[in-house]
Length: 165
Image 1 (cartoon, rainbow, N blue to C red):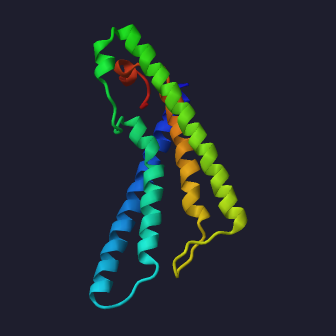
Image 2: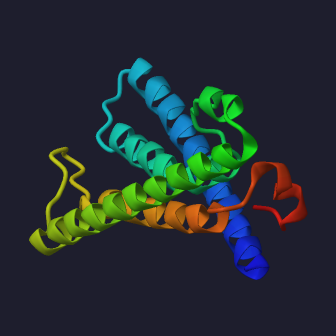
Image 3: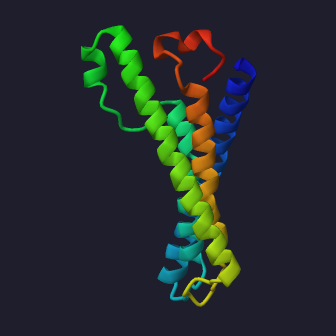
C-alpha cells in the first residue's frame, strides 16, 4: 500500500503543477485580453480559453487540495471526540467523500461522452468543442477518488510515518 500511496502523492503533486500552469496561462491571457481591448481591438477566443483553463485547474487541482487538506473542513467535532471515535468519524467522512467523487466522476464521464457524441461546440464565435472542458471533471474527480483511497484509514497523527500521503 505504501507504493500506491507514494504513486498517488506524486500524481497529486503533478496535478497541482498542471493546475498552476493552467491558472498562470489564464492570468496571462486575461492580461493580454485587457490590453488588446484597451487598444480598441476585439477579441473572440481569449476569455473562453481562459475560462477553460480556470475550470480545468479547479478539477485537476482537487487531488492535491485533498492531499494537503487545503479544503474547508470543520474539525471541531473531531477535536471534541475521543481519539478512537474521531478516527471512525474521519473514516466515515472519507468513505462518503470517496463515494461522492466517484459518483461525480461517473456523471461527468456520462456528460462528457454525450457532448462528445453530439459534437457540441460552445456558442462563441471561436466555437471550440465542449468535450475537452467537460472531460476535466471526470478526470479530476477520478484522481481525487484515488487520493481518497490513499488516505482512507490513515490517522492524520501518523501520516508522517506513511510515505507522503
